[in-house]
Image 1 (spheres, one colour):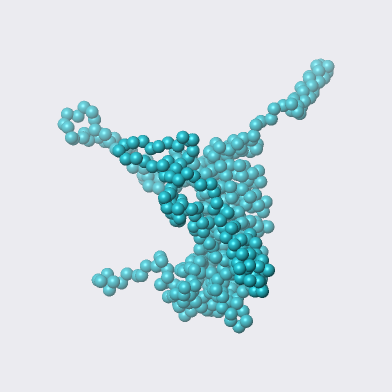
Image 2: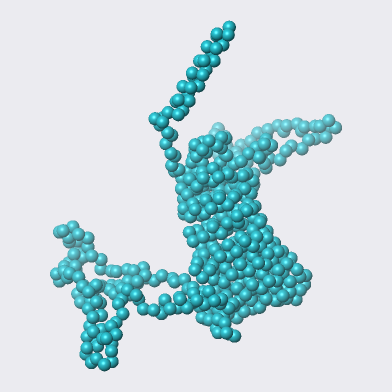
Length: 535
């Protein structure tokens, strides 16, 4: 009996050793790498399987509340004798109502929702929105709510999200993000071509590196970071990403920082970023413990502020670059321009040389007279167009540069010349640096107009007192007077919310701000009165 047991054990050992040798075989062909094809419903499960995530989160449609489906229409019977009349459907017998132990009727459950097992609601899933015009394949929005994402799952998203051409919204609510995940997202989110909205509410990150999401390569237009425990440190980095003397964000339109711990110091850093940012339209700083100091700094950035030493140096550098001649063209010789030399020598040394250099780029081989016109001539009477014997392309008779159309006639020698470089330059809207705006020298400081591009500011549920409200009132009044000036480059604030601060609702300064902003609020509707109804 003992020998049989020993033989069985020896066989098992041999089988295990053979299996180990097979697993460790270097000549074994590895599974080929999977390349995402842009179909999230197919790519995501396959990437989870290859990453040994079993079971993988399911991809489901995002539920939407809506009315119940309409009842099916009754069709008339085919054998009806009377034409144009429909036979009435036979009414089905009503089921007997259920009765409980006391003999009272039991109400049936409503039909507006479906019930599931209680554990189904705790399973992780990825909710998606599908483009209805693309046969249910193109994912436009992705929602992940209430389950923790690890580094492996974020690497899967790195492979699946960029191929989605129509993806424009990503919402990760309470997903347990970390600093490494934010750094990884900042590296691959610019590859999502049409991504516009990023919502990361309820994700407190110890490193507070949210500013990486709005760096130089960012394409995000709307960013929401509510209840992310952002402190003064995170606000400093976000303010630097909004605008500095060297860089200013030109993509972000809306920023929501509600429910954080920014405080006065953090609000000062945000205001510093607003000084040189000319793209942000909406800023929400509600419930951030901001007091009078932070409100005064924000008001200063919106009205008028003095340039610091670094900004003055950058302003002088930009002005010197704008006023300096083109470095590519060599400077004229001092000897040729000398007053001691005769005028003929001076002109020959400068004007003659520049004339030659101007003629060189326009010089080219001239074709025989009338050849260009003959190639493009179309005879009347139904005759065909003459073809080029060499098979070369016909030269265009019109030159377009996107903004101008220059007509060239072959017979006119003056207009047959090659157009100058200034005529072919494309008109590009130049973004003016705020430091280059007109400044006023007051009390030994250079003062320039503040941010007039921001149109919506929410400072509700903070700790702003009367001094902070007074500074904000002066800011909106100054913006109103500045919009009448020709130097204005924006409309200024159009909506300002200051409810639930450290002042009562009937405060005089708060009433003045409210009355001043009502005239500019595009969504304000005057209350209906009996006099207005009669008129």
